[in-house]
Image 1 (cartoon, chains in turn cyan, blue):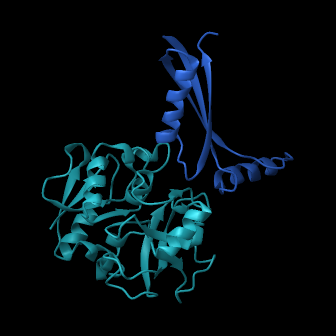
Image 2: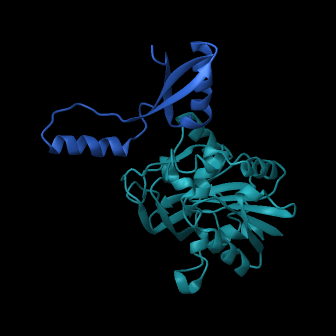
Image 3: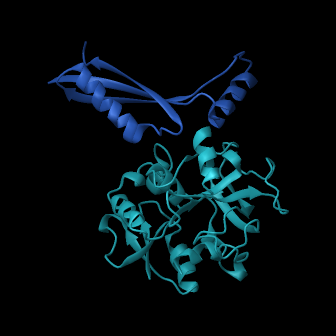
Amino acid sequence: MTVSVVQFGGSNCDRDAVRALDRIGVDAERVWHEDGLPADTEGVVLPGGFSYGDYLRAGAMAAHSPIMNEVREAAEAGIPVLGVCNGAQIGSESRLTPGAFTTNASARFQCEHVHLRVENADTPWTAAYEAGEVVSLPIAHGEGRFEIEDERYEALVDDDRVLFRYCDADGDVTDAANPNGSTGNVAGVLGESKNVAVLMPHPERASLEELGGVDGQGVLEGFA
Amino acid sequence: MTAYTATVTVRLKRGVLDPEAETTQKTLERLGFELADLRSADQFEVDLDADDAEAAAERADEMAQRLLANPTLHDYDVVVEEQGA
């Protein structure tokens, strides 16, 4: 499998994503957005960063880059697509996934380790975990607060499309453990089908034992 | 064709938390101002040529739907004025 890691102007986690995928034996390459997806693309990462300087809203500009039409077609064809951080914002802005990621409740950029509870382990992105398992991943975002209309949130929960919720070390989903004010402490969701997922925390930054643990590897194994 | 300016105002829907507005309000209060509430909005002024004001408004409305606003977060309104009028 070759995973295309899409670089937009201002992406900055693309190399990390390629390195983290290489480490688990998944072939990955960076693809400049203007060049389009290579024909042999069997997976897509929308990496973190600050595409287009977060102009208008984080992810809003990249969401309308022509390559996103190809990403949408790939997603509809069943190819795995993962959006991380700015990639999650791009995913929601392009309506690949529901809801929106907007300004943190603190109104500040937050860079810290958080605990996440695995809500649905029956997806390619979470199959490496147990439902209810607590993992530790870093976040680094100013616009990570998940917002969604009440009725859509209920549908999301009913359809088991919440992947991770922010929680404390014991796995309790509390307001105190919610770093950004996200609705329902939601940190990551599925698109319309299980092959599409976005999350604000960075799995690729938790993929080396020497650098704070490997809890994120399981998410990347969605491409394995 | 006539030259118009379409002013698109994009606001957070009522009930959606606005941390920047809250911070701004707190700072105004620290400066001694009394206020009940404060909301922020983004405003875009789009110059465009169109057959009539209705066509100009329609195009600006589509711009708001497709990019300027995010329907999950925002309401918006469009006001069109003929340039130089």
